[in-house]
Image (cartoon, rainbow, N blue to C red):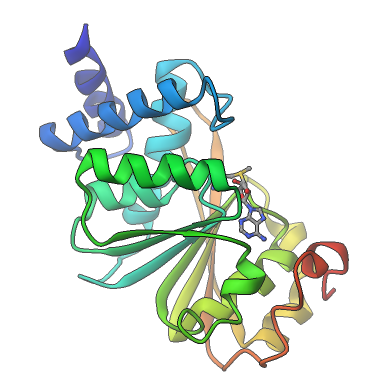
Length: 240
Ligand code: SAM
């Protein structure tokens, strides 16, 4: 039974031209098992079906690597990572990357700490707290080549939470649904205020026909020091 997970994952990934190595497939299975155990006490995911888990969580996260060429060894932060999406699947496939997993939910970060230890993932760090606070801390501000976020909030809010972490010349990538256009239009003025420039919108389809997109924002200017505003304000009073 156990080998079925690995075989099935490798096969499903091939439908979208993603090659998963056998030993990495074993890591994904271990990751799924950890989530299943912890999901009984911490709300990590509502996705219970195995195939749906593979597609909506693992393959969707790996799509970032398929669609965007991420250079060797760069530093990445996954903001509002929850159970580790997209950061952990990305790290399993690309061990050269230095990954920071940020979430404000203490229980989820305990799960993440435990899981990265059990999976033996090196250069993977967990940050527990709000993006608004970490983004103001000079140890983390403008220190990352890439920031990723999936299912955290609307783009106009996300830009304020995520762009402060990105170095000049780096990128913020928002994993969005099939129609991100409205959110992009709504965020028009926000890009400029925070030093971002819309670089690309990449559309893709998951194996079971679900359509998604990546909104890629380049950091072209420094983010003014007054951003992000204090905890909860970006969500309550979006810039536009
Ligand atoms: N990215 C994961 C995924 O796609 O499965 C989790 C998505 S979950 C719906 C949103 C997560 O973002 C939650 O775990 C929540 O605690 C976290 N979050 C929301 N706002 C945040 C903030 N301002 N700072 C840090 N984490 C935040």
